[in-house]
Every structure is written in C-alpha cells, then in structure tokens.
Image (cartoon, rainbow, N blue to C red; front, side, top):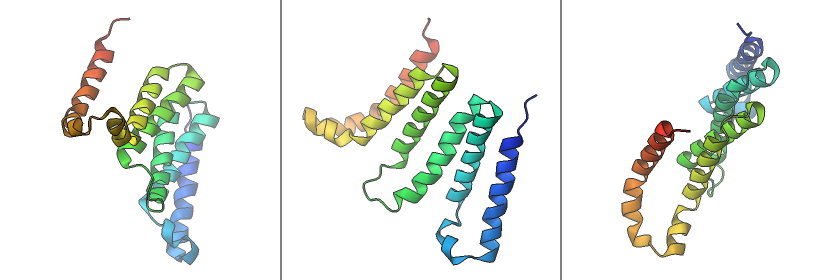
Length: 159
C-alpha cells in the first residue's frame, strides 16, 4: 500500500494555516476566507502527492480542485472569464493530458474535453459565422444528447 504522506501533510498544514489566519481575523486575508481557498489547498495536496508520492492518478483531482478554486476567485474579477461549464471541461481536459504525459493514457479524453471547452467558449461566434443563429435554440437543447451518445459510442466501441 502506498503512503499518502504528502497528501495528508499538505491537508493538515494548509487547513491549519487557513483556520489559524481565520481565527486571528487578519484583515489582509479577509477576501480569502472561503471554500475556494480550501479547494485550492485540497488540489495542491493532490498535486503534491502525485508529484512526490509517485501517484499519477492524483493529477486529475489535483488539477480540478486547484483550477476550480482559482476559477472562483478569477470569475468575480474578470467580466470576460468563461463560465463554470467551460472551466469544468477545460480542467478535466488539462488533467487528462497531464496524466497522458505521466502515464501514456488519457490523450483522447483530454483532447475531447479541451475541444468541447473551446467550442463552448466560442459557441455564439461559431453560430454567427455559419449563419445558423436561428437554430441555436434547437442545438442548445440537443447538445447534451450528443455528449451522451458520444460517450456511449466510445464506451462500446471495439478496438
């Protein structure tokens, strides 16, 4: 059984500092007393365990928790920042690509998630470019079905 030393230590130290600063009520850190900070600490714990503990499977939750926590801070500050749907697809795509770099598996899923996130970012511009803005409502109603069918196809596809 592998050790979770880096994960456990990072969680204990990070959460300890978080709650210590919160109990002191240090004014400089007032905007950071939120669950987004705890998400970043949790993500960093996963990333450190992956890097130093030799467990590449911890990359995906590490990228996701860290990225989503950062997204919560950045989204409130930048008006042009993409929404949560786009960020979730992008984070999963980046996580799978990092797993691919470490273990050699997950490249297809990573590329697929990144393509979906890019399509969601430029969704309205793509529709305007092709002149099908009147079909936008129909497409937006059926794109989840397309995702389900694509997932089922990949699941049952024979190699």
